[in-house]
Image (cartoon, rainbow, N blue to C red; front, side, top):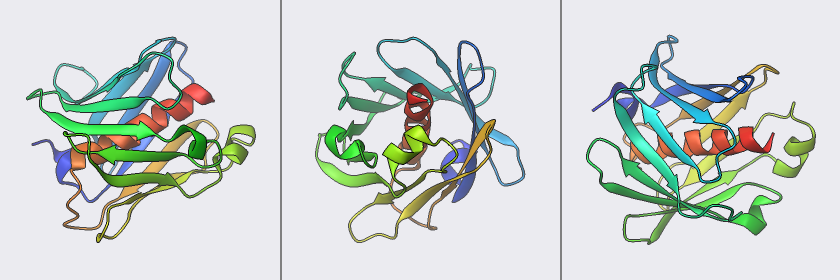
Length: 187
């Protein structure tokens, strides 16, 4: 298992000033890259892959949109090494107008967690200087937090997972990547 999926805290660094897509670096607290993804611009259907590094030769997790232009689409989260479906994430479109809101489902389609923005998304869309804050809600478990640091050129997001939290680390990384990719596309 990759180092990313054993860590309780890491940083997601995002560069959006690339001409043909975004670059996403998952880093440990010392700044070492532990996973990487890049997003192509102008794709009708999202298909995002998280790799072990910038060579993009060893995929870890794949995120695939089920539909092309659905504002509340469902994204399948797949272990790219085994092909096993880890579950899905469905964006709650109407709720997401004010605050991003996602339902996390298991592989059978049963909801078991929420991914919710704590900041006000509609303000952030017009004032991009406001950092985003998110948390995962899993019944009976402490919250997993994601908080952006302000920087106008490089977005950095701290991911903080309580030690021993049962939510699959691959799903957490996939949601961090998916929310950053969608936010970059909206911006």
